[in-house]
Length: 265
Length: 265
Image (cartoon, rainbow over all chains, first blue to last red; front, side, top):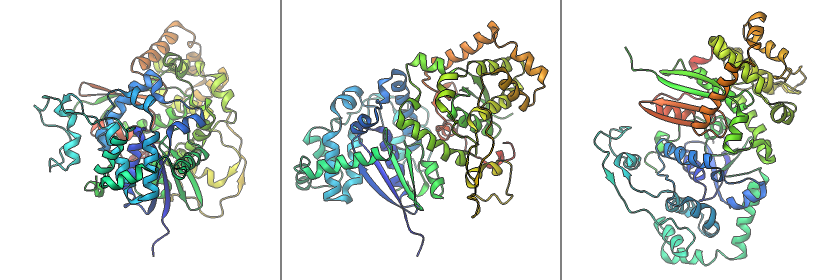
């Protein structure tokens, strides 16, 4: 019998792009490290309100940096993340209440579907592909394992303009949420059944409790990873503390795309 | 003849603890990667004013996290960083104008002393050692190459309380700045000669220009690393984008303490 597995709690909201990056890294490492990963959907709006923090994108220079940073990290992390077409309408006006209530209900009803359903909701908001050059799309074929030689950069003469249909960015309408759930592998009936429960006191309270738990750990944004290791609790903010997490766990950090995870994404 | 070296500019202020972490990492990697590192002292107060950003520690939950984060990173990065005894008086009231003018003058007069003098100023503000356990001090002997077996954790029975004299935290008084310069290896006369120039228009303008350059690159805090690679310019914020920097440079990331740098710190 090996050592007891350590527990990681990942608090996230699908409105938070860095939550997606942290989520993918922990999903990749959960089978490489001796850890139990607990996904905890919560509400970023509640955390901002509780801590008095403001969304970083309200500051123009931070919003500008966020877009460039995500573009760089998309390739480095091999997560097909892109800035939404209308960022302020998506992030600041529509919010994520119904999507996060849905994920909370998924967590309660069929937890084995939580990882895939969360990913499909992020894909809707944060993975819009717009007009650009083929070079911009280069990370996508690599995600699918192509080309087989693992070439890091697009070949020359791939700078042809393309225009692809974007994904529907909405995650507030019932039809959008159902579409994401079906793409994750649920039947329409199952997804519909879960959707009907999102306004129940059980689901509402569970989402409130998870958000309150993140606040209690000191969250002022998302993602937050809480590591329980040898009787100690470490709260780590952001998707850029995963190498530190490996250090605290005594595990090996192999970059955002550890070799053994390639086949999984 | 190998490929042309790439240029990295590091904008920093000794009031910024994450600047110290980024600085140490780039100093360690500058001889491992094919890069020319340009250290650019600038003024964090000017960057905050220009961007409209606020120091993160003004938000209580961020200040709390900052302290814990630095404690974790101190060991992981092997940089003897600690929270100042009276954080708000040091950071928010005293500021860093005279220290950063001094570093600017060092840059102009004897640039070969800039790295060591910057480090000594950080040591004054950010390396206070207070009451704690011997285990808390464990990174320090490791910095000095002890124990020789490179053991990662303190042995048992080292949890005895200690109390060491703290360093003087001040970096605003002439005597404090001179002490740091002497510790970096300057003679008293040389340090005094440079100190006399910190109010000259040349020094003041140079500091203003470096601060303005950081703002032009989109800075809203420090450190900022600007990488010039194959005709492209990448602006990276924080000390936690160094693995991404390696990716953009096509160089190998070997963690915050690459093996070959051990003897250098």
